[in-house]
Amino acid sequence: MSPHPRPSHPWLSALALLGLLPSCGDGSVGQDQPGRTVSPPNVVVILLDTLRPDVLSFYGAEEERAPYLAKLAAGGTVFENAFSTSTWTAPSTASMLTGMYPDRHGVTRGFLAQFREGEAVEEGALEQMELLAISSDVPTLAERFKQAGYGTYALASNVNIGPEMAFDRGFDEFERHDMKPAKVLTERLLAMRTRIEASGAPSFLYLHFNDVHKPYQQHPRFYRPDEEREETEEYLERYKSELGYLDSFLARIHQAMGFDDDTLIVVMADHGEEFREHGQLYHEFTLHVELNRIPFLVRAPGLRVKPGRVWENVSLIDVVPTIFDLIGQDAPVDLDGSSLASFCRSEDKRQGLLSESTALVQRPLILHRFEDGDHLWGVILENWKLIQSHLGVLLYNLETDPGEHDNLADTHRALVQQLIALLDEHRGRGSNPQSMRTQVDIDQDLLDRLKAIGYVK
Image 1 (cartoon, rainbow, N blue to C red):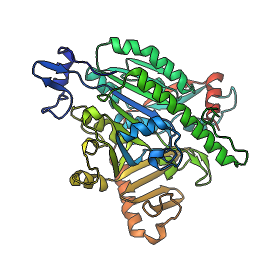
Image 2 (tube, rainbow, N blue to C red; image 1 turned 120 degrees about the vertical axis):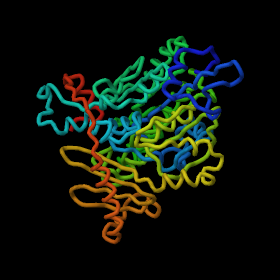
Image 3 (cartoon, helix red, strand yellow; image 1 turned 180 degrees about the vertical axis):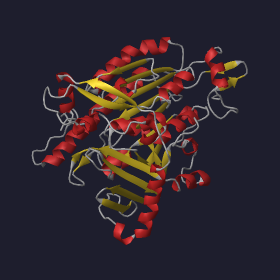
Image 4 (cartoon, rainbow, N blue to C red; image 1 turned 45 degrees about the vertical axis):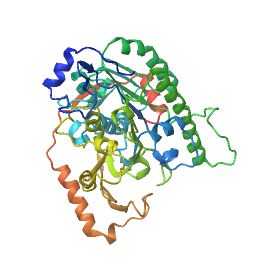
């Protein structure tokens, strides 16, 4: 998937009209040499559903369970404090693909929430359900790339990521293979490769893997048995087994697709997973760190992305502007997110970017989850995190209490009021997305698939 020099195409004119060509030699688009036009770089976005960062060696795990990802991280920029906008797949993935919070893109819940709210979920009792799709007036990442002359392709294995909620918008080819493992998505991608290369256009590829999501499988090559483990530890080991299995196919994809130094690779998760850190399993109704903190890395040596670590708080809403900035195009305007490209290109991630760093430090990050008519809100500002529900508020110092176990709300009441005011400002900003409400037929096959991954309670 390495970009090849080619004569000027009509889509380059379209880029210029859209204001998406760089005005100077900062990116890779434009004139590499006099009389020679270089195509925009290919872009690969990989979302690893339900992956928490602390099982990865480059986020501090003692065991190496994902050597491919570790190698990728060693050559790229790793964001230490990256957070999702929700702890559900549909809202957080929509934020990543739009650069907006859920109140703007319109997807505040997915299949799981809808089934929990339904009064009849027994076999044969529920025939239809209503879903909220990405707002019709909100451009997706694929639509932006399509407008810029890219070929756009996607493969997904999570039931939420499909046409029902408009996740297929803007893709030339979109395939969803519910609950299928990385092996199947890899095979489908390699079958798609010929068409990608034959298009003659730069490509945007989105891969959404569901392997580390419940139910956790034991993959013999990656599973480490221990008869003395208690139940939660066994679940975690199976989870890590899934990670190892997935990582092996990511390495195969990288080699088979020919990703080179000019290919922009962005890897992240939609949310994490809990293993009873706060008394629960999977990703239930909370906004705690084990669900809200995510891995996030960017690699593209040919686009001047430098290895290193960024410690400022960042979010999934930053993905869209960062990608466009890195490939030498103007970042879309009117997004909730900010470009992180200057951090990616900086040799010293902790120095020399004072203004950019200050802007991120002073920026609150908003978290939200909606279920059964109840809202759970959160805000992160500097090293403080507040979670608000109808039961009250929780306040944590993420520097001294990264696991979020010591509630300081009673002793920091002024700070609590300051953070609640930030939430009130966000909630009152008047967003009114034109969410598309779609009706989905529920048959036994879909019900069985949702039950298998815990989406029916």
